[in-house]
Image (cartoon, rainbow, N blue to C red):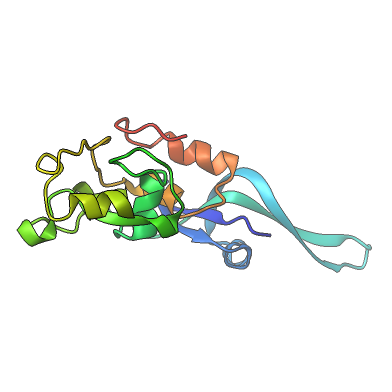
Length: 183
């Protein structure tokens, strides 16, 4: 089973992607307070005296009790998440590339005081990044095709899992910011 289970806190905020083993452990320990979505996997156990076999259904979304953190969330900035945010498209030439042909570009170059933050970083093909160099897009006469943004927690969980199931996607997408259109 490749599908991950989305773990939420009791307020419905995503906190982790779980393996089926981690999900089964939480269910057996009765730490799941509610669940949503389809059954992604059924585990079969032994047989009782009546010949009935035990089974454990694993839902695609579970919520567990615990502390609810209300602090602002900013996901870690990594190239893989950045490229996924920008849908593997160079935000200068508009061409889709494989990740090995992409690089992180700082809209305001770090050599000129730009910070390594979501709102200052975009995906660029190596050719465009080299052409831009240590200039701003305006100085290099290169149009930026989208405004860089920091993904919210729900967008981050979508970006961090390649195999998001339909019901998980529906749950996460309902909480995406309106500033971006995700396919």
